[in-house]
Image (tube, rainbow, N blue to C red; front, top):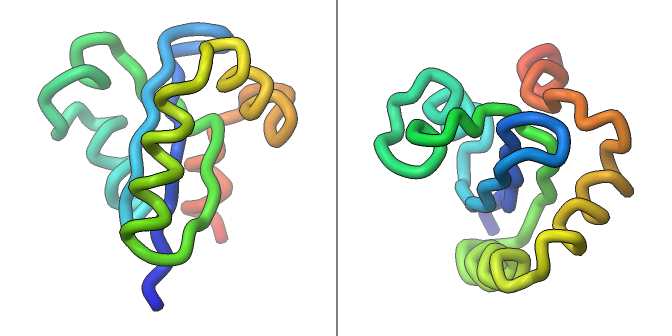
Length: 97
């Protein structure tokens, strides 16, 4: 079974948030960071990977993405801060690993 990822990008700490899912996290975040993706992240400068988790399969990732998108903003921030309290850009550690 292929791995999929649910991720959250932020414009800055406690800034604008974007939730998405993908099967290729490095590629997808690179596309967001370099504004190759037209739409929300490009328009609002949402380029910092602050959270991600692995899901089994496309359907699981899609369901988890929809779940998180429905959450209140405070819950999303709590999810980020539990895993990444300093709101570091996790993309850098992905590239280095």
